[in-house]
Amino acid sequence: MYIKKIMNEEDLRLAFAIRKEVFVKEQGVPLEDEFDPFDTLNGLCEHILIEYNDQPVGTGRIRLMDGVGKLERICILQPYRTLGLGKIIIKALEEIAEELGASQVKLHGQTQAEGFYQKLGYYPASPIFMEDGIPHVLMLKQLSMK
Image 1 (cartoon, rainbow, N blue to C red):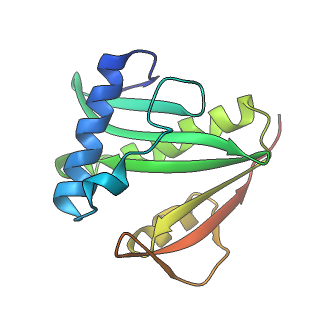
Image 2 (cartoon, rainbow, N blue to C red):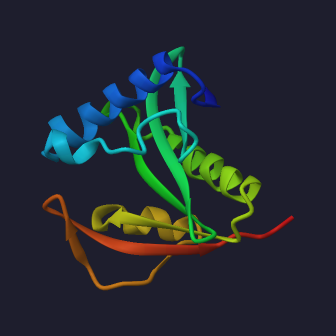
């Protein structure tokens, strides 16, 4: 298992392929809603890629919004979801948030993953809302500043 910050277009394309497989094909998110102006290497956000057995299998990104790290587009290809990789992605994104000076992180978690996020220290902070036809909840976590 290997996780890295995405620093080149090739790795960014690999991350996009994972997102397209999970969000667009599997969950039915419209392609035009999945990708946005933050999906570049322009410094507006940090993207990460996780590999398992030398295969890219998961991704996520984080951007700073008013001093809070917003975790986004976190996904893992279906055959790799029972290996604990989601926890590793979240931890890596939280570390980037701390590097950027954030003391809190937030995310729009799908309600089916709410328990997963709660085990990692997140708490729900909103009523359920719909995003791309999928129920979500705002989740927050305070980071321990080192």
